[in-house]
Amino acid sequence: MSRTTIYMTAAEMRALEIRAMESGAVTGADLMERAGRGVVDATFARWPALAKTRHRAVVLCGPGNNGGDGYVIARLLHHAGWGVRVLSLGDTKSLPADAKLNAQRWSALDQDSAATAPLNAETLADALGEGCDLVVDALFGSGLNRPVSGLAYIEGSISALEARPIVVAVDVPSGLSSDTGTCLGEPVAPLRADLTVTFHSPFVGHVLVDGPEVCGALEVVDIGLARFAEPVDVRAQTPNPSGLAKHPNAHKFTHGHALVFSGGAGKTGAARLAARGALRIGAGLVTLGCPPDALAECAAQVTAIMLRPLNDTEALRQTLDDTRINALCLGPNFGLSPDRADWLMDVLATKRAAVLDADALTLLARHEKPFSKLHEQIVLTPHMGEFKRLFPEISAELTENKLYSKLDATRDAAKTAGCTVLLKGAATVIANAQGDCRIVASCYENAAPWLATAGAGDVLAGMITGLLARGFAPIEAAESAAHLHAECARRFGPGLIAEDLPEQLPAVLAELESASKRSS
Ligand SMILES: NC(=O)C1=CN([C@@H]2O[C@H](COP(=O)(O)OP(=O)(O)OC[C@H]3O[C@@H](n4cnc5c(N)ncnc54)[C@H](OP(=O)(O)O)[C@@H]3O)[C@@H](O)[C@H]2O)[C@@H](O)CC1
Ligand SMILES: [K+]
Image 1 (spheres, rainbow, N blue to C red):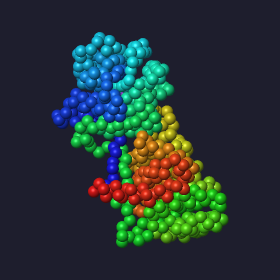
Image 2: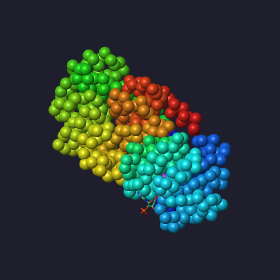
Image 3: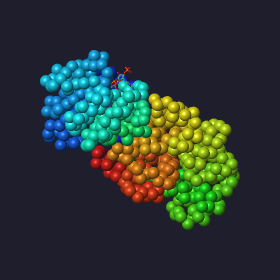
Image 4: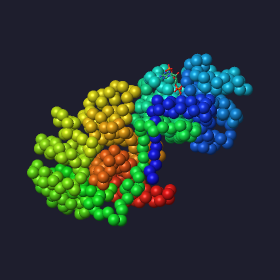
């Protein structure tokens, strides 16, 4: 069994909330109470000392339901014996109904009249000056729809304190777009959180771009929405161990034959890394297609990987006549000469499943009709620089429009190219031409910082190729390989170099298999 995480957009979350309320099983006020309670519980669970004695909190409440959660939190902390100051942004009379109800419940509590004030630089300085262990950021949540301005003083005032209080963001740090993970406003979000507590499922914005940096840690709390959930667009799933296992009666050809194209002498390392990744992930056979001058170099380095000299298009054609070669990898140090461009087009014409990486992406970008020969069995694996060259208009939109996400861009690119696109990053986004989307997020407890090393991308290209050879659909091959690749990096940890990645695969695959046996 694989584990699935759903990444939602604000509109999807709003639709879910409405379905839940329209069912009559729950009210908006119930959900708000659960949300506020969830934030307090998650905060106390992370910092148990806060639950033990009375402390002081400043709660910043905004003009919408995120602010409403803030009033619930203020009340719960007050009941726990805390000294609480609420600073509100906007006119509390204009709050939406559930938030207004909770603002009124807060005001009706037995507390001194200074407990609520409009938020501005002076009131914030006063409130912080009374002593503050916890700041709750409930200014804007998923309803943020335009850039925030005039709130930069908040981070300034908090950073200036001798001891920085813990900052907990409700749903998202205010200023961060839940749909794009970019900070709407200049220069950054008003407040960086130590912990962000969100509800039901993470948002796409929690894992993209600035999300992990401004959220701190991320906690997802259950507020009882799961039974109203409907399928949404974006998900992440750990690879299915049964799909990766090899069965006792299968032989090597059952698992496909991958062909990785190498560069010339002195430029074979990248292709060898890719070939090793393809073999370790379980392709039945892997061949390196080498220019003749590179054969001796490759022969000195590989054993289980086969070699085939490929010196001209006729040799290429003959090789590809073997239909058992069912997945190709082109790009890692492949070369950029005109004859390489011709090769690329010849290879694409065979309609074979293929991963196009590195130099193959550059060659495509230089082609007058880059997408004319692509097809659904192709996976493009650009990093952001390659993406910009290949999809300049989509990339310009991504730079200029803060409400257009890396996810939107990848999905549009996949449609434009007519194939699967895997856009690399700390959160790798994958989409196919039908609009299916996946995110492999290497952040929070899944961070894999040592993956930023030369050759890691070549190994990923090879791992995807290996899974294509094994018959995985392109989007599944890309997602599973990206997940396993990051898991290999996490498992190895500090000091990782690209050569280490394929060598971690046996342990990672074994762990997946035993975890699946334990849970069944
Ligand atoms: N989903 C769920 O199940 C649950 C959701 N819950 C909570 O609800 C939150 C979503 O609430 P929400 O929709 O009211 O939006 P929210 O983020 O409070 O902000 C909207 C307000 O801000 C304003 N505004 C926007 N941008 C602005 C800007 N740049 N600068 C200034 N103003 C700006 C906007 O103004 P308008 O666009 O109307 O002019 C509007 O007044 C969600 O994050 C979660 O915490 C939980 O209670 C329970 C379960
Ligand atoms: K917030």
